Length: 604
Image 1 (cartoon, rainbow, N blue to C red):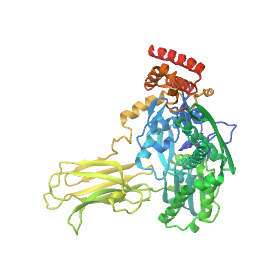
Image 2: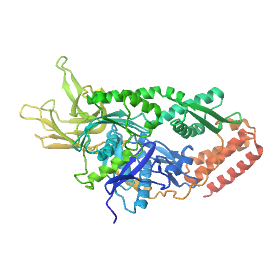
Image 3: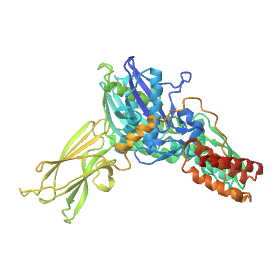
Image 4: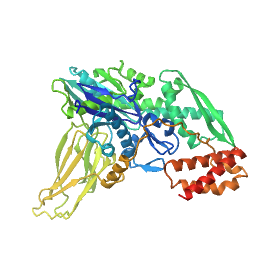
């Protein structure tokens, strides 16, 4: 048994990192010791030619081939949405579990230690379904998630552990691939107190990638009107846009080259253009306005003036974008600090939190973290309006926005009448603060009923007690009690499609545990048929001969997975491309190969 370690994981939209706390300090795990930045692992998953799973850098050559890879799955967490990978349907939790499993298995080989307990980071303004999905992803990967920690809070913890004697207010501007989180904290006497967290969970680096993509599309349409942008072409653009954005971090001009980008009437064309930083920043103006609005709202909620902020900590890959840094600099009138690496600050903080939870940091060296809830929680009550006599549902607050964690409360209510025999309870999030209108609240998927309530015999409606607890990881526990009748109801998360049930979790654990990663070098990417219009091949008179074969192949491919599916789809594409180009020699070659493959598949 080696030295005690604590592990923290930043499970990001664009990239993920794993760090460990050992010998009194956090360290990022390098996936290639010869490359200083190899602690950054792309959050992408793909399937190679042999149907083997690829994660991270090895997945790059395949991730943008339709149906072969998944990007940005973090944005689908807690939605219940399915994604297709190699012809198989997966939940976002499962794709995230593949990433977690890859990170941890590599860490175990490197550290020569079995890793079970971890702390995983989440955006500060995520809802309960999203946080629950993250915990489930950890469970599917065989991990014990001892705590979730908000990403900007984790970054501040990484700063605070090095500056434990500081006494000032900090602002963490965490702009990652998928979300913008802004948190204001106060440090005093080794205590780090979160004052407020706010952000935009639909604003991140991916939106800036989209800006670049739209610039390229606009230039293409201007130069080649009438040429289509197919699904294949658009998928290739995702990776190109990201690369172009990264070039513009340090250069004022970025060259773009897209071979075989479009096909029209049998003609295949390459496309190249130049994207300037100036036009990128101009087209990004609305995104910068949203980020500026988040800053203003955060300061408004905290009642802190910009001049009172001592240090501004930049975290996340999007803070490398020059116009984003300029926005922060101009807003506060001073330079942000770079005492911690923006790429690994969050995973550092997660490992520190894990070390605190496992008592690996002494009291003298430690720091006390007081986090808060980035949303409020309430229930609905039926009240009679005095001026109309009508009964109306209203929002009743149980936990205020930005309450200190852990939080517990008991609230007292009454039934409407002495003969009321049933009670339905619903619970909501408050993202605004001090709301009274139920329409402004967000149902969090927690509800329940108490039935067969006996009548009250003392002339007063029964009293109803609501007990709420919210822990540091964001786990909600609610009980509704009627003391007079002895009835108690525990309110649990509903079993909607937003959450995996126990049977799904167990089945998924088995599937993930038995899915091997491709640990060998990835073979060269096979040639992919150039994109064609769906019906372009039908313009060739020879198509009548091959139509039944093509339609049969398309129908069969719907029920296949893995290498056979990939081979069949590629052959169909090759044949259709040859028909569109009226290349009789290739038509015969690919047509015969398709015939043989369909025969083989039909006799398996």
